[in-house]
Image 1: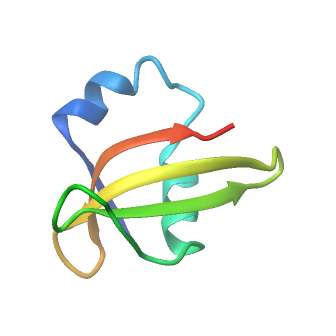
Image 2: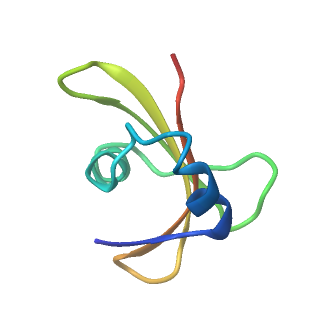
Amino acid sequence: MHIIPSEYWAKKRHSRPDITDDMIEYCILNSSKLKDRTWEEVWNAISRIPPSGRLLKVVYREKGKDIKTIVTSYWLD
């Protein structure tokens, strides 16, 4: 999977250094594809990340089969 950061995520990444690309990819692969409430063509993924067990939410767009643009990502707990 190829991950492309959006401009917003590139700015926010400095304040969330504990969220890595591996965690984002794990979350997308191990979650069902959830439609976003407000934005069209935007998807959500929510998954527990081992070994910490924390919930990670990833908001992304699909550019192709294996190309994802990350809008934002954050911990839910």
